[in-house]
Image (tube, rainbow, N blue to C red):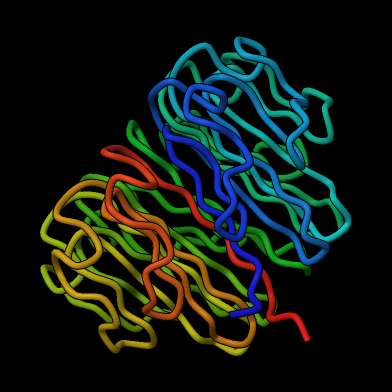
Length: 300
């Protein structure tokens, strides 16, 4: 299949099946994050630093001493990276350590115009302006964010979901506790998922216990409105289950990606799949822990 893809874990980074960062080079342990743009540029981050196309742009201790990192990359090659030590856009620190979050995970995204969003348990910032306060978005726990090409933004946590500052899902409706995932396309269509189910434009498309009884979830949404949601209970494409419970992962986190033609990707500690075909095996990508994936468009 002539489709660009990238997958990463604490055991390294693979670009189209070739290992571009080794075990111990990217991170000794802990979670990683990746992104891939339409030019084929790639970004990978961990507690050991940030790499673009194999070149380290943020050092170990500069991006984060411990804990997870988050990254985004747009079509032009603009990049964003965030951690509990701050947020950087194209190498410039735009949010300081303690300003974005004292501890815990951070979420970031950047659109093709260079507009960016960053969120944590301390609030949500769009282009440097705080749009949701500490305690408003979440008292504790992880936050998920997205921003589209029009500058519309989506943020969610265990306290609910907000679209351009308006609450669209209430506390307890989206999730009582645990991780939330979000996606937003250019038309303003949105997808929010948690251990309590998945909502597409306000309609619940996966029920509590159907998507996952507990644990983290992952989602993706393209411009056609195709949606992908995954958890340790399986992966669903437009409501149809494409990977079963135990096939994708027995437990623990997973990652999903979806391109504009509807090709889909899912990864976990049990391997990586593209359109249902296994690309990386259990133990090859990672023995345990978090996996990150990104998917490009089909090449002619």
